[in-house]
Image (cartoon, rainbow, N blue to C red):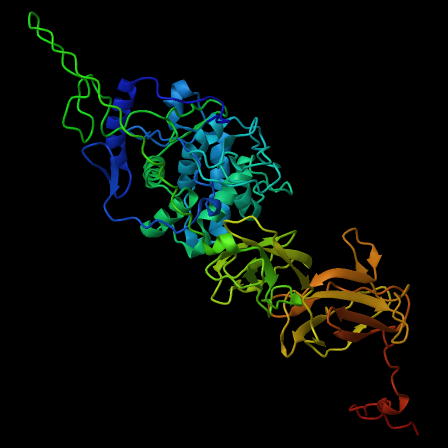
Length: 593
């Protein structure tokens, strides 16, 4: 088996193997609920449930992984980057870019799926076991691995059998799938689990930011709460369905929870143990000459004769035995999945929903034989494809459903996101290569069927001034507040001429220049929208502001620009009469005779 990792890793000597068993037994005690038996085998305090999932449904296709366990003493946390010599063993640290990717993925999952409680240390534990932290942090500044990390081909030769699903796009193999990237996703899982973690517009399994975020979403599906041990175990087992894998990841998780530190990119050390390494059984160790083989009662080699004793007679040659009849191979048992020839649409049509709404119809597919007979008990995977934020209920882009007795599988309800346009939902048969069945779905803009002003104050202004009141409207759809509805506001020439006016009131753009059409406006959660302030040029008259939305709602708002009314002149008839002279109080002088 030719692995595509940087180097082929094998245990060098039996003594190293035996020592590793002892270290494994001691180190395993660091993991929660994990103990070791007398032979160094790890066990759990409670029986751990193993998901009923095929290799094709796991993240890695149950590919090989690194089996090294952490040291017994965890390092003290240290916030800054240093050299491996000054910071302690490089093995105990995490390369800076890789650690940044884990922490950013945790932050995004806390926002997107707060009930999952994903710790970044779990991503670090899986990254350590899957790729040795991207081969010791061999990544560039954008998080792209320096060369692809590709696991062995899953051709059924000691591994799961997973035929090619990506035409070799990710793994370069057009016959079989290989696990790819620092988190070792198989292409068929990456097709629905892949996320863009570094906002470069694409999802790439060879980018640590994309791979870490995708692993986080993968571990947070099915409503699992990773702060609950049973859910944590289920999530890890779904990544690689092996009890030994579970114990190894839990050991590294506990190690990183106790503390770790950053090391420069490219300075980490690669683990040395692999789950696909051949070697003696750790529970039995090497057999010495003359030792008993397991289950035998006689020495495997005859003891030597004592000196001076007569040589034993040579044994008689055994009589030739009659050739035995060849044992016929056991009959193969055909499963329901083996009989599926194609998928049929089970009546789904007209998949259209308004942004943010749930699609009224659920997608359904029927598994059929070549003769057109329905096949029950077959697992169908439904995957949301294309540039869309639509998901199934629960926020996932993939759902696996088993067909009923009529051969029909019904996907969970599909929920439209905010992105408008068409996208595809593809149904495929899990565990069998048959043509997928595509369903076209469309998300349309949010709509309102009515618009109304929230106030009735007349909107007036003087030439060259500004309107004192801002226009506020409320959008509704079927009587309920219509949130996030796009509204266009235009100063038009008249009711009969909806073209944009070239004079009268106007808005201002960011540079302070007049504009008479505004687009990209949206109502808030209560369906309300307050328009920017309006201004008037020197033109007087009555003008019209028209508001329109998707769905046909429209509203005309009247605006008036007029000179201020002059102060009224005083009315002469209302003026007070002149006051009569005040009579003198001095005595009058008598005229001379």
